[in-house]
Image (cartoon, rainbow, N blue to C red; front, side, top):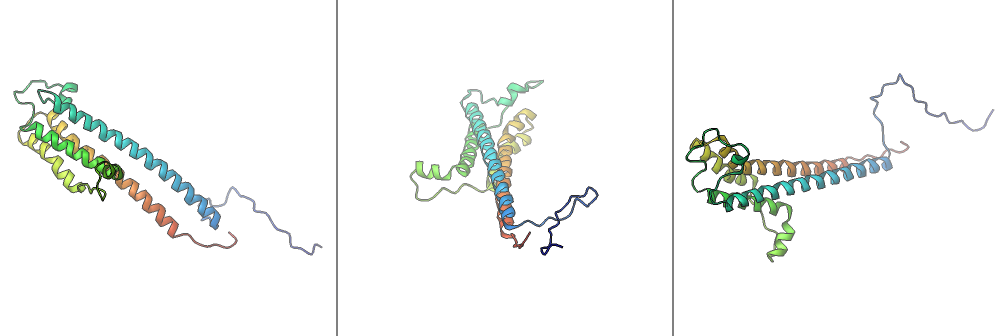
Length: 195
């Protein structure tokens, strides 16, 4: 008879319940959190790149629309009207385009506050307008287009800035939520000796 107790190894059984909770030791917890943080960082970078490109392309379209002499919107080029109407744009289209470019500038400040502060030689990072204010400002032109009963192409063009604000807000909220979830996961780590 052996004076030492033999260790029995764990054998996986196919008929055991797979949904059993597994207790992780401290090192395994750290590895899981590190892996989740790395995935979150990659996802965050991809979202930032996508949103920056989207805002840049939208701003370029707005700028092109500002420079066209007829102030016709790009949606009419892709989807021409069946029966051309005498009025295909809203009044003060140039002013509303400048407002859309201002909204895009605010969205750019969200992504690059340090660069804007450095470039403009400010003492503090500039504070962009709230999303509520950006929604309100960007909703004026599509509301006017609806009120004047202009074509759906014109309304869609003026609604485009509001959609961009929504996409940016959704992406920023997702990134913030992911960061918060990782922090909460770190705060609920447990100590399990011998796990």
